[in-house]
Length: 288
DNA sequence: AGCCAGGAGTTAA
DNA sequence: TTAACTCATGGC
Image 1 (cartoon, rainbow, N blue to C red):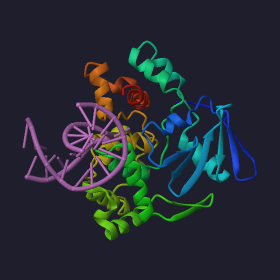
Image 2 (cartoon, rainbow, N blue to C red):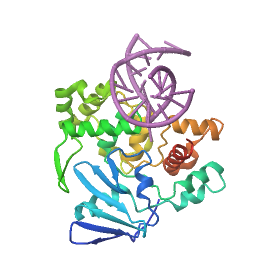
Image 3 (cartoon, chains in turn brown, green, cyan):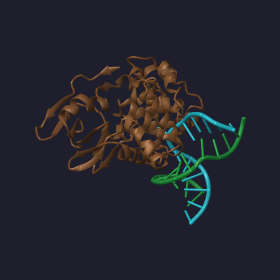
Image 4 (cartoon, rainbow, N blue to C red):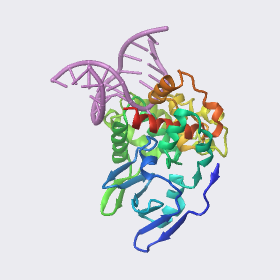
């Protein structure tokens, strides 16, 4: 994967900063492409949360090659730049799909969308929650477990809650049980949480630097309640495995309608996951 | 093989 | 107003 090397952060010394040279990155498309459930948008300003961090971030409509940020500058440099994955350069992928009718349209429509590099633990739990839920419902449920089990954070004079650590989530499950609104997923989450605490599964060792895609999938699918869909989402959005190709009802619908029910994701190698995200975003936005 | 779980937010009918 | 559906998975 090619990278942009000239992304620049200017500290305004007043709690805000400017991220420059983002090369067509679209904050809106990236956050609204269904990969992330911990943000809200008020007047075109996104409040984004991950782990125990919060930022306010917006894309200047007059100069959309910059992002304006309210939040800790050190976190922006050390966490958020990587989290939004602004530096990955997808021009090779966009060239690859030229001539492939549907995929070319999807890539054009999704231009600026990036696969984020989210925290693996957070991603795993969010996508276990995601099963058989719609996106607004996933967001409220994730928010609820943060409020019940996370730690209070003060940001811009408002209260927010961190994503619970495995230890805090487990004690929350013991305390609140079915009142957490997790439905039949409660035991799935309890099981995964215990496995992480007991180090029977070590998520850090499953990222793309330390593990093959196949091995990562095999290990994730040993978790009770984690099947191919949730494992692929965790691999793609939380562990950097861009060859992962999650197939949900939307993607299946597109494959059925546009590709006669047959789509070989493997042919796209490490670009498969990005193409999947283009398909998902385009298919959901345009197809009804 | 086919159906069921729990419940809530959204969209189609 | 009601019904079906929602970024699935495991049990039976």
